[in-house]
Amino acid sequence: MDNGKLISFARDLVRIPSLSGEERKVAQRVEFEMKALGFDSVSVDEAGNVVGIVQGAEAGPTIVYDAHMDTVGVSPGVPWPLDPFSGEVMEGALHGRGSADMNGALAAMVYAAASLDRRTLKGKVVISASVLEEVLEGVALEKVVAQTGADFVVIGEATGLNLARGGRGRAEVHLETVGKPSHSSAPQQGRNAVLDMMRVIAAVEDLSLPEDPLMGPAIFALTDIVSDPYPGHSVIPSICRVTYDRRLLPGESADDVLRSITERPELGDIRLNAGIGVGQYSSYNGYTFTQEKFFPAWLLPEDDAFVQASLGALTGVGLQPTTRAYRFCTNAAWSAGVVGIPTIGFGPGQESDAHIVGEKLMIADLLGAAKGYKAIAETMLT
Image (tube, rainbow, N blue to C red; front, top):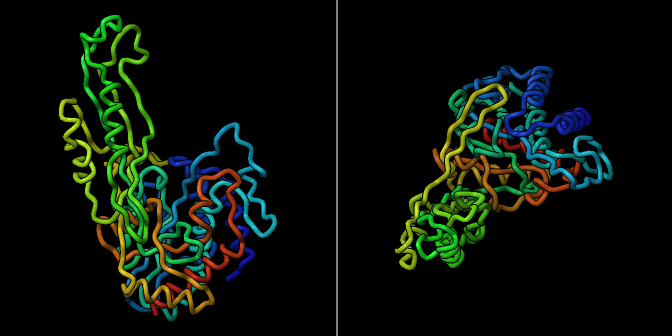
């Protein structure tokens, strides 16, 4: 594996802005690199995912490595120590938006796959450079697996070169209180939906949420609140809507989440509507995903065969991985949480490196990830 070219490729990816739905240029760069490295098949599907395949000499299982191409934006007015799209390498780190989340992992996967000896492989390696993960976890990976199949999945989100055998899920919960409008000079003639919502919020904040020893507590986080009409010119608001980000633990369903609020006895006199949000997002080539925003948590046991084989592979190339779980949601919400494909997470950088000002990735982690990706493939396919 040519480490110099790997670093150069990762730098190129960081230099290309690639917000969700605007991944075209980075997709073109990934496609070019896969073809230059001699992948057996390189294609761009209808959703804009770049899919590269390295085919072994004999039939066998399929292992899919997934890294999303989209990044979050750069908040205006917040200074960065370096240009967020510089791709600068300084003090042993690659600097810029997407370096840790997750251009570095994508570059490492591409180079790891290209360095495999096809003559010894039984099966195939698929590199999924996926779209829109930052807004709809798992929907793009589903499209890739429909084309290629998958016996195993490796998610490249940051683990500090440790191995994730589970991850929290995510739900977008919408709550609406319905009151009765009146003139604000006579509020007693109406019912203020905002005051009702204040009671709902207090009840949500008082919920006793479950915890998992590996991935921590479930979370309800209030993210927005809007009254209607707005602005309320001398009118008592008849509608109030809030959105919660709910971080999920294994086994939780959408019904569980909603009932924990709607069945609170102290809210029985309030007209309360509760549901899971639906997101609609278009990829850079116009393909539109419409998806309920409930992305389940997942967990593999410590003694799972894929977990143990991957731990052995990583240890065998000099890494010192421990097992853990993602605290955030990833594309594994679909592969492991929905359809039950054996899935692990392994990637460079820490979760805390994602979405921050001054994002960076240590070069040693980048190279370690490439070494680890190669080792996992060799272990599972030879």
